[in-house]
Length: 219
Image (cartoon, rainbow, N blue to C red; front, side, top):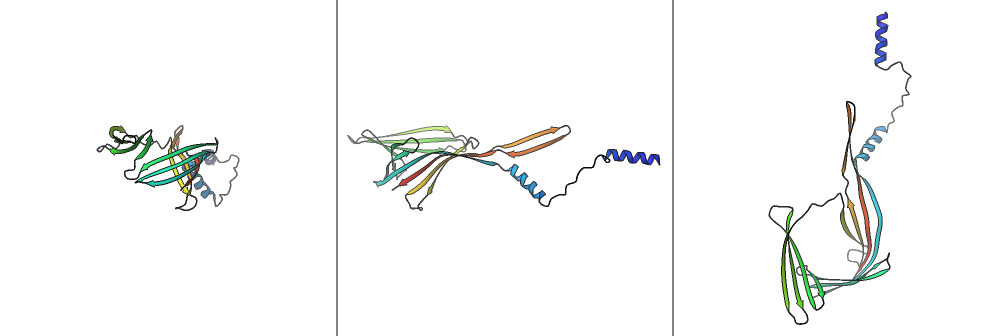
């Protein structure tokens, strides 16, 4: 009998029975659902939005003439209270940019060509054609340069520009939004406690910075 009581005492001591009883909380019906949501919330990246944009009023008048498109207007900065004249002249035939410098009318165009099977090696072909309006002399020059195309660093941020129509697709008013999006990096943490270890996998924050919000009026 004494041997049996001794074996029961040893078994109870190993099983931590006989200590002060702990309170047993009944499991709520929605507790597994909350735990699943918490795990999903830890795994998905959080979104951090910073809105402190510069605001401008952009007014443009577009004129089509001789296979070219001339845009004349001005930008008004609401923070500085200043107007700045703007103009752009584009060739609709090859998509070049036209500039008037003194008495010389210049046409600039650049093409980017991929060289062979190298995905990060490209060549830039530049064209510059000019017409002197004073004596009608013409000139043309080509330039060729190879350069390495680096991968886009999505962690540092990617610049995006979006124009949203305010009065329909064929309207004259648009809201231009310029923002920068930085994608998060996955976080991997390993914690060791003696012979046991835990691995935590999470995501950083998705950062969105709204840099500019402009009201564009085009005719």
